[in-house]
Length: 444
Image 1 (cartoon, one colour):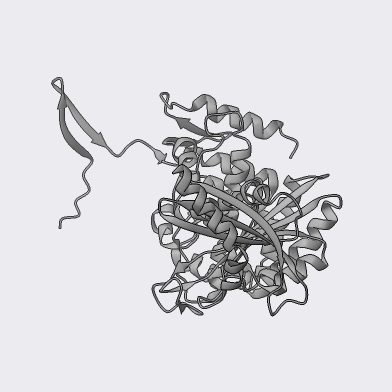
Image 2 (spheres, rainbow, N blue to C red):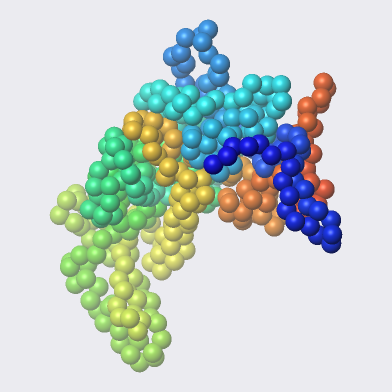
């Protein structure tokens, strides 16, 4: 194939006017709106704080790209939809990304290459990862000032399929695949990511949950001493160690509970009543009750919420274990069911932030990647907070990215200014301006 560089390309004509394309448009980027993310980063010093957790092991006189620049390059590239370090091959000279990483688009040196970024990701240590996770919690506390009456914590795990020789990738029988098994913790009321922990692929859903809560709860209880803290999780987290820990720390919980024969026997009359009502009316029946139950491994009874639902498809039973003492249906419908929103958050992280792109060989490097992707999600959380009252108030990450960040722009550098020329016909210009004003006017 010839590699001739054409100065002009011809694309036919419109109304007898020839369409000619050249390559003289100047420093063009498709990510002009990414400067909003830079504004957020500078406001909350996120990349600076993350980079401050890392130690540079390189020889100082041979360093071209400092840690903060490398971290900004990866964080902003992920946010803009370039999830792989390989993308650096064509992004290193992108004028918008260079500006976001604090380099001048024309006179500044290009950003790091893929090998440099890969070495950066693989140099991280376990202690540094712990400090990085602390930054997420600090950002949460900063953006959620007290006092608070209620705080909800949602826990959930997810599968992350692996496709190579990644360390601690194992086959998981439930998911029927080789995978990692990340654990995520979110604020159940507004979706802020509190923690993201990478786990080996063969771990149980509940593995590490108590350890993560031991780290989070003292800080949260100190910040919100008057708040009632509620933990929600599905049946994968129904283990005595978690109940006992939460009870010892005066934390409320609502956790799914796996159906067993003893529970079915205890709710047989409720199930029969639901069936009889359905046969009499032909309409779906949902009946609730609660009772105390003690499994063999428990040292005392706990409250069980039972739902018996009967439809044309038959009986559907669900059980919860809780230390709340409110109406059973209210606990199920108005508290537990809302836990399902964490699945939307995780789906957004995986599909739109690509948090499942953990393709390094080294396990710790993949944990670092997971934290970087979660930090990018936190940036979008901050951006979405400044979109309240607009049409994008509840928009998904990809919608926000397409409408506010993926803006074609020509960037021009003069001796005193850096000009970013957006298209005159950009349809969301007023929204872009409003978001910037909201950001600069907000106290935190």
